[in-house]
Image (cartoon, rainbow, N blue to C red):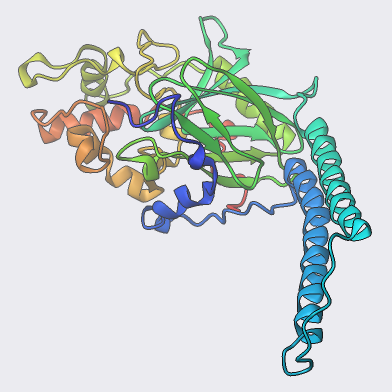
Length: 371
């Protein structure tokens, strides 16, 4: 039975940050700061200024109610007067104040909220469109406006979203299995990714950098491990990346080790009961066109493994254990185990997938600081 359905109770929206706190132990490796108040995002700026007005009104209401309470308690203290308080029935002026003032406050908040929604919700004509699809437990990022040269389909990257800084990014979310939620706090608000439904909204940042994202709805055993990176590049660097990604063709194996890894990826190894990897994964420029698992086209250029569980050198160190039995590293992982492959076969498979790199000038890691 799925953990999320469209009939979930609405309490899941009460505290979205709780979902991140549940995964705090797993997030310990991260160097990024999750900041809902990052004002480099126009989305966050608009929400911030609306919030300031609401917070100011809340403070004034608190001060007014507190004053009235303490004034009344002090004035009618028993030790100041033993006489029975004057009895009266109704006070039309007071009742009018208690009705009109809340109506004014709610009206102001409604106007502010409607104004902010009118600013942040419409999709700008020059926005970059990206499709974000959630699955247990990883993300697929597709660039529908960037077709692959000399082939079919469009540019796709797994778990690492590369975008230009200073431009609105129109994210269209959906899901394959259960309800997930896309949230990169530094870049804007969150949206549920619901099977059979597509929702579009905007994120952005003026500051180039690497930002952390997470699924913020409990979606299964590895919910806390369903992370992604957003790499915001300067415009020129982004154009270099997307142009290279469109023209990318996987390199041919250059030695016997890579050739064996290529053969296992494309054909499997029947003697070890290993299915072909191409049935689930896509590699641009090859016959591998699977869509069940993350796109592997630029795997060698990525900095993460397992939807952000392992980063940097830890990613390299865990490739073979991941292939051998990923469920030991990530509970709920649906990738089949390849336990019968020899250590040499695992090394060869690793050698091959690490050759799947973008040109150096189009590689996006190390080009911008981690935020």
